Length: 337
Image (cartoon, rainbow, N blue to C red):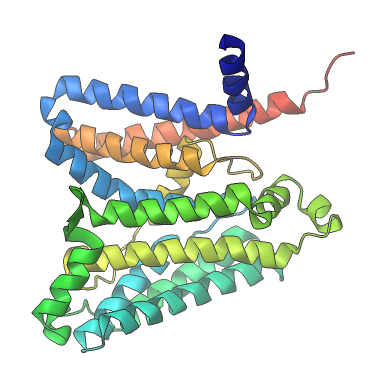
């Protein structure tokens, strides 16, 4: 029996990226307990619920950015797609459009941005930094233009208080089983894309492109379409976060989503997703998003200055990437005869 247990553990640890994911979860526990000992309010039920709700945005962004990073690329347009989505959805609803239809149009607009990114990088072979930087400016520009260069009115002013409350409750304020809907939405999206990455041919192709794009192409992988799929996942996750921010504020803010692309990178790399491509698990991204939010929450609870918060989180991100580089360098060393 003991040998069987060891075999299961060994097989789990042999999964590429599992060690990094488990390390992130251990780090999460240590960080949470440390902050809890400094301020007992960290352990309170209300703080845990708020932490889960706030973490959900980082988890969604992290899932999207992780898909792209595993292909060996990056998506700098994430934050702007979040802002564009928040503004489009809120503008349409504040002008009286049915919330369901407004959400569908918002999703469509976000997915168009994903297709553009995918084709610029996959088909036209633009460096992902340049391609998504351009999309970042375009989508942020749309966020400004869509409502005449100003934030929207309250969405309830267009669709009525009952419909406005229903939209806000669904995406942000209501609870199911005592936990905010925002977390459940993020969890459902996470599970769907976890399955897509871990159990489908698309997932295998995404890892193959990130490991060696030329070898993947020679093996029959449709590099353009697979790259586009990764960017579509990123865009979809960004749209969901935009809807969450719109529901949270009850209106659209033109600057919504600023820096979110970096939050996505942080959630991924802290959880062991390699920015060089080909490695990482969404399980690690979950842990990375939780670590990021726990750090923010804990530093706020102990009244650390905003500058200190940014420094601590920045150092952790750099160390996570350095660890990935060191581990990859070690794996490339030829084995001695």
